[in-house]
Length: 112
Image 1: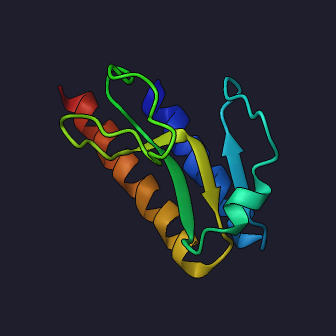
Image 2: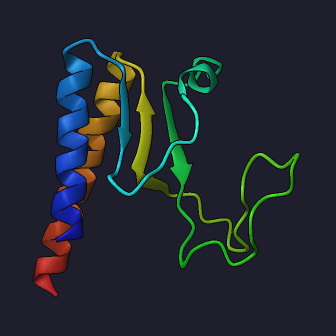
């Protein structure tokens, strides 16, 4: 199921982060046209991800000076197929919390 796959992603990222490595995680269907490292080096955040837009982006690509796509409902859940995480305790705790959240969601879905 999707939730089982999502859980596996968070678990794998946690293990790599705990080993002391930064993680750039991309699903197999993601294409990079350039080396992302220079862009990622400019971020000071511990975690960077692609914003999820339910149903795809219905408004088309962003304008040249626009840095993000805004969905009318302002839904800002992370897309679990595109992540960058710096190896530190905050990132590890985030991955652990995400695993717990997914586990709770899977249990709720099984009760339905």
